[in-house]
Amino acid sequence: MTSTSRAQGATVWLTGLPSAGKTTIARLLGDRLKAEGRRVEVLDGDEIRRFLSAGLGFSRADRFTNVQRVGLVSEVLARNGVLSLVPVIAPYADSREAVRERHGQSGTPYLEVHVATPVEVCGERDVKGLYARQAAGRLTGLTGVDDPYEPPVDPALVLPTQDQTPRESADAVYALLAERGLL
Ligand SMILES: Nc1ncnc2c1ncn2[C@@H]1O[C@H](COP(=O)(O)OP(=O)(O)OP(=O)(O)O)[C@@H](O)[C@H]1O
Ligand SMILES: [Mg+2]
Image 1 (cartoon, rainbow, N blue to C red):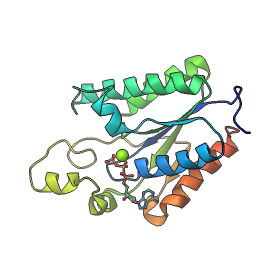
Image 2 (spheres, helix red, strand yellow):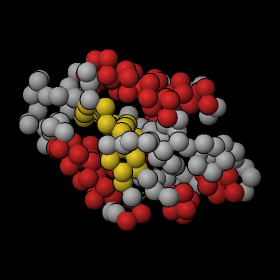
Image 3 (cartoon, protein in one colour):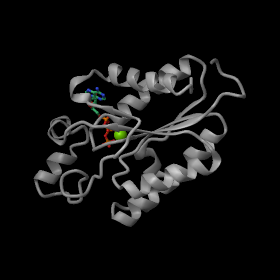
């Protein structure tokens, strides 16, 4: 479908460990969808934390609140025809479930994509140097290392990015959207 006011929106939540590839995949997919005329937003975790969730930390309660705020914004966008791509760690299953329920209440599609890169690979990528800082004892509470990560039990898609190029991973999410009739 080309871009029309009747386009069906959706939230695609990319959950996974730090350096798993969430932002990379969301940006690649977002660029492709925009080029095809879709209305797309990428709600990136880092940008959200600078503004919408400024002041929140990384406790369980703050992580939960952060995910609910992003989930609210994403649902509003998706309900209004936008494809909202959300590369946010969201380590706790109950926080993702609450977002799913919010979407369910308005009949808005919510797809969970598990960017399932093993922690060893994430630690080698270490895009932001977090794994190195944790290993050096200069940071605590790193998701997947010394803070919990609860993997999705029933994701719409699992991406083993250690065996894929970023383009292949983004194309797999594109194929999922096509399969669900969301393009
Ligand atoms: N198949 C793939 N998909 C996505 N990224 C990949 C893939 N293969 C290698 N990479 C590389 O892995 C890194 C992922 O970094 P990225 O910032 O996207 O992670 P992130 O999940 O957003 O992390 P954070 O939670 O810290 O924001 C990039 O350097 C990217 O080029
Ligand atoms: Mg990121």
